[in-house]
Image 1 (cartoon, rainbow, N blue to C red):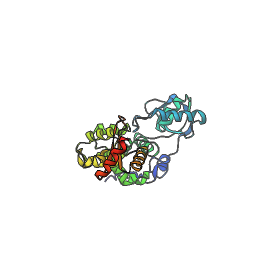
Image 2: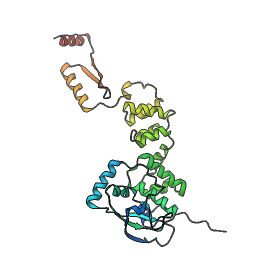
Image 3: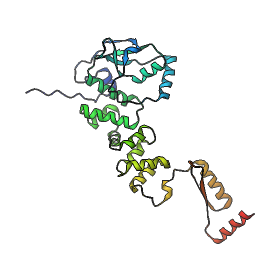
Image 4: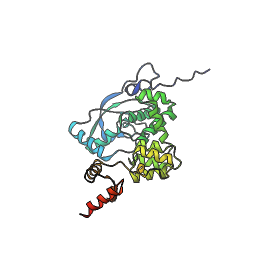
Length: 291
Protein backbone atom coordinates (compact mmCIF):
# COMPACT_ATOMS: atom_id res chain seq x y z
CA UNK A 1 0.00 0.00 0.00
CA UNK A 2 1.16 3.53 -0.73
CA UNK A 3 1.82 5.43 2.41
CA UNK A 4 -0.16 8.68 2.63
CA UNK A 5 2.00 11.79 2.88
CA UNK A 6 2.18 13.33 6.31
CA UNK A 7 0.41 16.67 6.47
CA UNK A 8 2.64 19.54 7.43
CA UNK A 9 2.12 21.05 10.85
CA UNK A 10 1.65 24.76 11.51
CA UNK A 11 2.65 24.40 15.15
CA UNK A 12 6.05 26.10 14.95
CA UNK A 13 4.69 29.54 14.13
CA UNK A 14 5.28 32.17 11.46
CA UNK A 15 9.00 32.71 12.02
CA UNK A 16 9.67 29.03 11.34
CA UNK A 17 7.33 29.00 8.36
CA UNK A 18 9.14 31.92 6.78
CA UNK A 19 12.49 30.18 7.24
CA UNK A 20 11.33 26.66 6.38
CA UNK A 21 8.13 26.48 4.39
CA UNK A 22 7.97 22.71 4.01
CA UNK A 23 7.76 21.65 7.65
CA UNK A 24 7.63 18.01 6.70
CA UNK A 25 11.22 17.98 5.48
CA UNK A 26 14.20 17.22 7.68
CA UNK A 27 16.31 20.00 6.16
CA UNK A 28 15.03 23.58 5.73
CA UNK A 29 15.04 25.16 2.30
CA UNK A 30 17.87 27.60 1.82
CA UNK A 31 17.31 30.90 0.02
CA UNK A 32 18.55 30.93 -3.57
CA UNK A 33 19.98 34.38 -2.91
CA UNK A 34 19.70 37.51 -0.80
CA UNK A 35 20.06 40.48 -3.15
CA UNK A 36 18.36 43.50 -4.72
CA UNK A 37 16.33 43.44 -7.92
CA UNK A 38 14.78 46.22 -10.06
CA UNK A 39 11.30 47.05 -8.84
CA UNK A 40 9.78 46.52 -12.29
CA UNK A 41 10.83 42.85 -12.17
CA UNK A 42 8.57 42.18 -9.17
CA UNK A 43 4.93 41.12 -9.51
CA UNK A 44 2.14 40.73 -6.95
CA UNK A 45 0.94 37.32 -5.82
CA UNK A 46 -2.45 36.77 -7.55
CA UNK A 47 -3.61 34.70 -4.55
CA UNK A 48 -2.82 37.48 -2.08
CA UNK A 49 -5.70 37.43 0.46
CA UNK A 50 -5.40 41.14 1.08
CA UNK A 51 -7.15 43.16 -1.63
CA UNK A 52 -7.34 46.60 -0.02
CA UNK A 53 -4.39 48.81 0.91
CA UNK A 54 -5.26 52.21 2.43
CA UNK A 55 -3.63 55.05 0.51
CA UNK A 56 -2.86 56.95 3.72
CA UNK A 57 -1.04 53.95 5.21
CA UNK A 58 0.93 53.39 2.01
CA UNK A 59 1.91 57.06 1.91
CA UNK A 60 3.18 56.90 5.50
CA UNK A 61 5.25 53.84 4.64
CA UNK A 62 6.48 55.49 1.43
CA UNK A 63 7.70 58.50 3.43
CA UNK A 64 9.58 56.16 5.75
CA UNK A 65 11.14 54.35 2.79
CA UNK A 66 12.25 57.65 1.28
CA UNK A 67 14.20 58.53 4.42
CA UNK A 68 15.31 55.13 5.75
CA UNK A 69 14.95 52.73 2.83
CA UNK A 70 13.39 49.26 2.97
CA UNK A 71 14.73 47.69 6.15
CA UNK A 72 13.18 44.22 5.79
CA UNK A 73 13.69 42.37 2.47
CA UNK A 74 10.71 41.02 0.57
CA UNK A 75 10.42 37.26 0.13
CA UNK A 76 10.02 36.38 -3.56
CA UNK A 77 10.25 33.38 -5.88
CA UNK A 78 11.16 33.09 -9.55
CA UNK A 79 8.06 34.05 -11.51
CA UNK A 80 6.65 30.82 -13.02
CA UNK A 81 5.21 32.78 -15.96
CA UNK A 82 7.96 35.30 -16.78
CA UNK A 83 11.61 34.32 -16.94
CA UNK A 84 14.15 36.37 -14.98
CA UNK A 85 11.38 38.10 -13.04
CA UNK A 86 9.90 37.42 -9.59
CA UNK A 87 6.61 36.95 -7.78
CA UNK A 88 6.12 38.43 -4.31
CA UNK A 89 5.47 35.89 -1.57
CA UNK A 90 5.57 38.26 1.43
CA UNK A 91 5.92 42.05 1.42
CA UNK A 92 3.47 43.36 -1.19
CA UNK A 93 2.65 46.39 0.99
CA UNK A 94 6.33 47.40 1.04
CA UNK A 95 6.51 46.91 -2.74
CA UNK A 96 3.51 49.18 -3.32
CA UNK A 97 4.91 51.86 -0.99
CA UNK A 98 8.32 51.60 -2.69
CA UNK A 99 6.66 52.40 -6.02
CA UNK A 100 5.11 55.51 -4.46
CA UNK A 101 8.54 56.45 -3.10
CA UNK A 102 10.01 55.93 -6.61
CA UNK A 103 12.57 53.40 -5.38
CA UNK A 104 14.34 51.63 -8.22
CA UNK A 105 15.83 48.55 -6.51
CA UNK A 106 14.21 46.36 -3.84
CA UNK A 107 16.05 44.10 -1.35
CA UNK A 108 14.70 40.56 -1.65
CA UNK A 109 15.26 37.03 -0.47
CA UNK A 110 14.69 34.67 -3.40
CA UNK A 111 13.19 31.29 -2.50
CA UNK A 112 12.30 28.26 -4.60
CA UNK A 113 8.65 27.66 -3.63
CA UNK A 114 5.76 25.85 -5.25
CA UNK A 115 2.27 27.31 -5.68
CA UNK A 116 0.91 25.69 -2.53
CA UNK A 117 3.72 27.02 -0.37
CA UNK A 118 3.36 30.51 -1.85
CA UNK A 119 -0.35 30.58 -1.07
CA UNK A 120 0.11 29.32 2.47
CA UNK A 121 2.91 31.74 3.24
CA UNK A 122 1.01 34.67 1.73
CA UNK A 123 -2.03 33.99 3.91
CA UNK A 124 -0.02 33.47 7.09
CA UNK A 125 2.18 36.52 6.50
CA UNK A 126 -0.89 38.72 6.18
CA UNK A 127 -2.70 37.33 9.20
CA UNK A 128 0.34 37.61 11.43
CA UNK A 129 1.86 40.90 10.31
CA UNK A 130 -0.71 43.18 8.67
CA UNK A 131 -3.61 45.21 10.01
CA UNK A 132 -6.26 43.21 8.19
CA UNK A 133 -9.88 44.05 8.88
CA UNK A 134 -11.89 41.32 10.60
CA UNK A 135 -13.37 39.94 7.37
CA UNK A 136 -9.99 39.72 5.60
CA UNK A 137 -8.55 37.93 8.62
CA UNK A 138 -11.47 35.51 8.66
CA UNK A 139 -11.04 34.80 4.93
CA UNK A 140 -7.38 34.00 5.60
CA UNK A 141 -8.29 31.50 8.29
CA UNK A 142 -10.93 29.90 6.06
CA UNK A 143 -8.41 29.53 3.22
CA UNK A 144 -5.89 27.86 5.49
CA UNK A 145 -8.54 25.43 6.73
CA UNK A 146 -10.12 24.66 3.37
CA UNK A 147 -6.97 24.42 1.25
CA UNK A 148 -4.54 22.90 3.72
CA UNK A 149 -6.77 21.09 6.20
CA UNK A 150 -5.53 23.01 9.23
CA UNK A 151 -7.82 22.93 12.26
CA UNK A 152 -8.81 25.88 14.42
CA UNK A 153 -6.64 24.48 17.21
CA UNK A 154 -3.54 24.29 14.98
CA UNK A 155 -4.11 27.80 13.67
CA UNK A 156 -4.51 29.15 17.19
CA UNK A 157 -1.27 27.48 18.29
CA UNK A 158 0.75 28.61 15.27
CA UNK A 159 -0.49 32.19 15.06
CA UNK A 160 -0.66 33.02 18.75
CA UNK A 161 -4.45 33.48 18.70
CA UNK A 162 -7.11 31.95 20.92
CA UNK A 163 -9.36 29.32 19.38
CA UNK A 164 -12.41 31.42 20.31
CA UNK A 165 -10.95 34.41 18.44
CA UNK A 166 -10.61 32.33 15.27
CA UNK A 167 -14.05 30.75 15.69
CA UNK A 168 -15.74 34.12 16.24
CA UNK A 169 -14.12 35.62 13.16
CA UNK A 170 -15.10 32.65 11.00
CA UNK A 171 -18.73 33.22 12.02
CA UNK A 172 -18.60 36.64 10.36
CA UNK A 173 -18.39 34.94 6.96
CA UNK A 174 -21.97 33.68 7.41
CA UNK A 175 -23.30 37.27 7.37
CA UNK A 176 -24.90 38.76 4.23
CA UNK A 177 -22.57 40.48 1.77
CA UNK A 178 -24.01 43.88 2.70
CA UNK A 179 -22.98 43.49 6.35
CA UNK A 180 -19.55 42.11 5.38
CA UNK A 181 -19.04 45.20 3.22
CA UNK A 182 -19.84 47.45 6.19
CA UNK A 183 -17.11 45.69 8.19
CA UNK A 184 -14.60 46.02 5.35
CA UNK A 185 -15.36 49.73 5.08
CA UNK A 186 -14.98 50.24 8.83
CA UNK A 187 -18.63 51.22 9.34
CA UNK A 188 -19.11 48.24 11.68
CA UNK A 189 -16.58 46.71 14.05
CA UNK A 190 -16.05 42.97 14.42
CA UNK A 191 -17.93 43.18 17.73
CA UNK A 192 -20.95 44.78 16.07
CA UNK A 193 -20.90 42.16 13.32
CA UNK A 194 -20.65 39.24 15.77
CA UNK A 195 -23.71 40.55 17.59
CA UNK A 196 -25.68 40.34 14.32
CA UNK A 197 -24.64 36.81 13.31
CA UNK A 198 -27.61 35.09 15.00
CA UNK A 199 -30.18 37.73 13.98
CA UNK A 200 -32.82 36.87 11.38
CA UNK A 201 -32.47 40.27 9.66
CA UNK A 202 -28.78 41.23 10.09
CA UNK A 203 -28.62 43.60 7.09
CA UNK A 204 -31.59 45.64 8.29
CA UNK A 205 -30.22 45.77 11.83
CA UNK A 206 -26.75 46.73 10.56
CA UNK A 207 -28.21 49.78 8.82
CA UNK A 208 -30.02 50.71 12.04
CA UNK A 209 -26.82 50.34 14.07
CA UNK A 210 -24.89 52.60 11.69
CA UNK A 211 -27.64 55.24 11.51
CA UNK A 212 -28.08 55.41 15.29
CA UNK A 213 -24.39 55.07 16.15
CA UNK A 214 -25.05 52.20 18.56
CA UNK A 215 -22.26 50.60 20.57
CA UNK A 216 -21.71 46.83 20.72
CA UNK A 217 -23.81 46.25 23.83
CA UNK A 218 -26.70 48.20 22.35
CA UNK A 219 -26.32 46.21 19.13
CA UNK A 220 -26.55 42.96 21.08
CA UNK A 221 -29.78 44.16 22.70
CA UNK A 222 -31.13 45.22 19.33
CA UNK A 223 -30.33 41.82 17.79
CA UNK A 224 -32.08 40.00 20.65
CA UNK A 225 -35.21 42.10 20.12
CA UNK A 226 -35.18 41.40 16.39
CA UNK A 227 -35.18 45.13 15.71
CA UNK A 228 -38.34 45.82 17.68
CA UNK A 229 -38.51 48.85 19.95
CA UNK A 230 -36.93 47.90 23.25
CA UNK A 231 -38.66 48.51 26.56
CA UNK A 232 -36.45 51.52 27.22
CA UNK A 233 -35.81 53.89 24.31
CA UNK A 234 -32.63 55.01 25.96
CA UNK A 235 -31.10 51.60 25.28
CA UNK A 236 -31.05 52.47 21.58
CA UNK A 237 -29.48 55.88 22.08
CA UNK A 238 -25.71 56.32 21.81
CA UNK A 239 -23.97 57.07 25.12
CA UNK A 240 -23.94 60.73 26.13
CA UNK A 241 -20.73 62.65 25.84
CA UNK A 242 -19.02 64.25 28.85
CA UNK A 243 -20.13 67.79 27.95
CA UNK A 244 -23.81 66.84 27.87
CA UNK A 245 -23.56 65.08 31.23
CA UNK A 246 -21.78 68.10 32.72
CA UNK A 247 -24.58 70.46 31.58
CA UNK A 248 -27.18 68.10 33.03
CA UNK A 249 -25.39 68.11 36.39
CA UNK A 250 -25.03 71.91 36.44
CA UNK A 251 -28.71 72.51 35.67
CA UNK A 252 -29.80 69.88 38.17
CA UNK A 253 -27.74 71.60 40.87
CA UNK A 254 -29.07 75.08 40.04
CA UNK A 255 -32.73 74.11 39.70
CA UNK A 256 -32.64 71.42 42.40
CA UNK A 257 -34.69 69.29 40.01
CA UNK A 258 -33.66 66.36 37.82
CA UNK A 259 -32.65 67.62 34.35
CA UNK A 260 -32.20 65.27 31.37
CA UNK A 261 -30.84 66.31 27.97
CA UNK A 262 -31.29 64.15 24.86
CA UNK A 263 -29.08 65.68 22.16
CA UNK A 264 -28.89 64.26 18.64
CA UNK A 265 -25.49 64.87 17.09
CA UNK A 266 -26.68 64.21 13.55
CA UNK A 267 -29.26 67.04 13.46
CA UNK A 268 -28.11 69.26 16.33
CA UNK A 269 -31.64 69.04 17.79
CA UNK A 270 -32.74 67.56 21.08
CA UNK A 271 -34.94 67.70 24.14
CA UNK A 272 -34.49 69.05 27.67
CA UNK A 273 -36.68 67.48 30.37
CA UNK A 274 -37.12 68.75 33.90
CA UNK A 275 -38.66 66.27 36.34
CA UNK A 276 -40.54 67.25 39.51
CA UNK A 277 -41.99 65.11 42.29
CA UNK A 278 -44.61 67.48 43.76
CA UNK A 279 -46.82 70.45 42.88
CA UNK A 280 -44.67 72.58 45.14
CA UNK A 281 -41.59 71.82 43.02
CA UNK A 282 -43.55 72.61 39.85
CA UNK A 283 -44.79 75.90 41.31
CA UNK A 284 -41.26 76.83 42.34
CA UNK A 285 -39.99 76.09 38.84
CA UNK A 286 -42.71 78.22 37.24
CA UNK A 287 -41.85 81.15 39.51
CA UNK A 288 -38.17 80.80 38.64
CA UNK A 289 -38.86 80.74 34.89
CA UNK A 290 -41.21 83.75 35.08
CA UNK A 291 -38.64 85.97 36.80
